[in-house]
Image 1: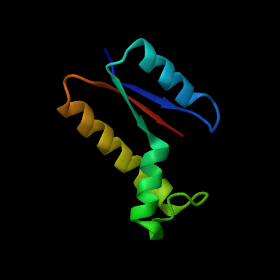
Image 2 (image 1 turned 60 degrees about the horizontal axis):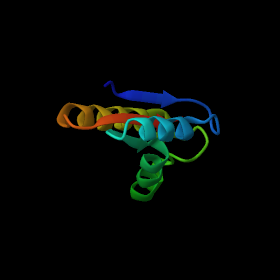
Image 3 (image 1 turned 90 degrees about the horizontal axis):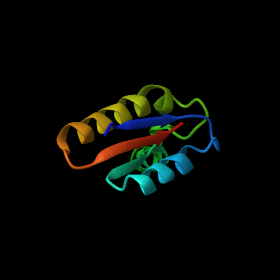
Length: 86
C-alpha cells in the first residue's frame, strides 16, 4: 500500500474520497488538514493561519503538515496514511 495525499479546492470531495478509500482499505488512517489547521489556530492565534492569505497559511502550515505527514509515515509500519487538505 502507498500513502496518499489528496489536495484540492474546498468542497471538491477530498474528504469523501478519503472516507471511501478508508472503507475499502481500513488500514488507512486519515489525517485531515482542516483539523491540523484548527489546532494550529487555537495554539498560535497570532499566526493567522485561518485568515485569507494569512502569513501562517503561506509559510507555516505547509511546512508543518509536510513534517507531520513525513514523521507519521516513517515511524508507523502498520498503517498507511491519507492526508486530506486544501
